[in-house]
Image (cartoon, rainbow, N blue to C red):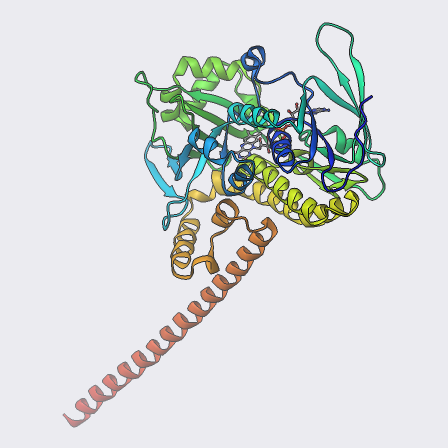
Length: 473
Ligand code: FAD
């Protein structure tokens, strides 16, 4: 049994889960001088065996402003960006093979970055470990939690001997143990804990476009490629080795219909002929038929704290991946938690955690909703002229009025504006647009009416003149 006694300014913290968010949290809290113990159920992801087995929910991820701000606080922004590929916009692939680039910000050319999940997790764990304030324990699975007492039980497995139990006490417990969080399960037993989880009826499968023979990318490197097909879509993000990770998002029943090599070939020939050419027909069929689609979950939780425990990252707000914000929002959780711990440094930790939950819940719910919305935008709306026109107007107005008129995507992706405020801002813009539309309709109607009256008077006077002429004759 390991005992960590209670200090206030420099706290004893236990983090469950050394995924992206837990390991970043260990870096930032360790840097602040807190005493951090990081526990992870898997073996060390940096070991050769684990690297060979590495399979995950996505091979690469889009990193944007919120994630970058948190990496900067850990002192890792520059090194991560140096190993990432900038994507300056969406490249839309039509069924006829034609392509159209849509920049994320035509005014300033801001970018998001494609970064390898494995690289990011490794660098975060290594950075955390460098700090003498941080200890990292792999193959320790959280199996029991007492939030009121700050007590956690981990099951330690080393593969050789029988599992043993390790009991840890701390002043602050941070649950970064992912979408199916064990800490959250324990929290939900507390009264007044609200929770919802929704599986959407679409799933995803990862495929790969290999690098060209000369190691170059087979498509324009600096874009997030999208093949929108209304009901489903394919996307591709570039990797440093010249390949693209391709993800097919599609209703689960359609995955079910593609059972044979012929089914897969017919489907891709009809929907994504250019992508099939780049993946390679044989490789595609083999990969597709040997993979299983993965499910997509959205999780909301309120409050995010109980006793000495708090949830962050996917444990607090797993979301569908269509806004590219899951990791970014999780990283931002750590920035905010760190700020609040500073603000409440001489107060009981429970007070700080309640403040964190109050400030984070509305924003977590907002980004979960936005992520669901963006699937419709990506697979469907990008093809529609009303969307394209609105986008054009939004960027014109953004150029004219700056921050006063920031388009929703840019607010979410390139600013630290709280997510709930981004939605409010968009609602306000929609109202303005509606008013402008009605005012324009009224103006057009009045002008048309006025024109008709003038025309009527004109015709009337001409007829009158003609009649007078006839009568004179
Ligand atoms: P996880 O990464 O799930 O880490 C949780 C860790 O906890 C794991 O290491 C796990 O082994 C460990 N753990 C679990 N249970 C226990 C236990 N009982 N005891 C101890 N340890 C435990 N986000 C973006 O920002 N941009 C993107 O482009 C993007 N693309 C995505 C694409 C796809 C297809 C998917 C599915 C997600 C995507 N995301 C993206 C979301 C992103 O992957 C997640 O939001 C992010 O990984 C969350 O990190 P986390 O550390 O909270 O959880």
